[in-house]
Length: 252
Ligand SMILES: C[S@@+](CC[C@H](N)C(=O)[O-])C[C@H]1O[C@@H](n2cnc3c(N)ncnc32)[C@H](O)[C@@H]1O
Image (cartoon, rainbow, N blue to C red; front, side, top):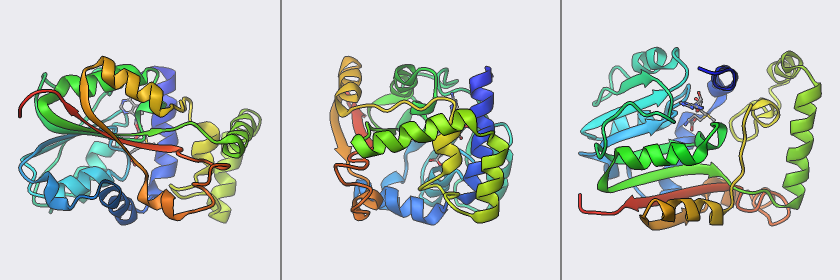
């Protein structure tokens, strides 16, 4: 791991215990308009599954053929496997880098990555790797940060700069003591200290996917953020969260 990856892995150890798993699963299913059985019989990979591994948990609740997950953080494959040990499908979790996926070409039916590629040193390479391991005719899901609207941009700029001045330990003590902005939806630590945070327009994402010959590129508005009228307004964050689903050319 390089120093950016070590810092990224460590940061999310402090944030992920505060993610509400069921809420996140519901938001995902509602956003995409699918049910759990969508994953039945599929070979699935979660790139950057995280400390709660909510998506791995969802896939393991279906009758998926295989559920795999990869993350930089070596602790999580152990804690998540322990938590999910009574689920119908047992996940195969490994420690590794999403920019060099250790899986064979054209293996998975469904390749998922939620909130990860924009925190890596090369989001384009990460998507290329997802495409490589996905079968022709398979499906890829990506959640990437979109561009901010003007007010959101200013708030974000302020957070990032405060993160350069205020020591991490102070902010962590503050959110721990108060519980303010500690959860997944609005995490102060995430906003201030994520070592890399890239924000992409639909155009940039689409151009890269088209260059990889992807088909059926669909953008979904997050069900959760759509309900929060203020946050999803054109002044605040607009389409800050990009949920993209696409297909790899060919027959499954
Ligand atoms: C914001 S969290 C998202 C976790 C999970 N997908 C979720 O939705 O809750 C980012 C995750 O990506 C992982 N990550 C970041 N860069 C990575 C890389 N290059 N390879 C593998 N995992 C990475 C981090 O360790 C962290 O678990």
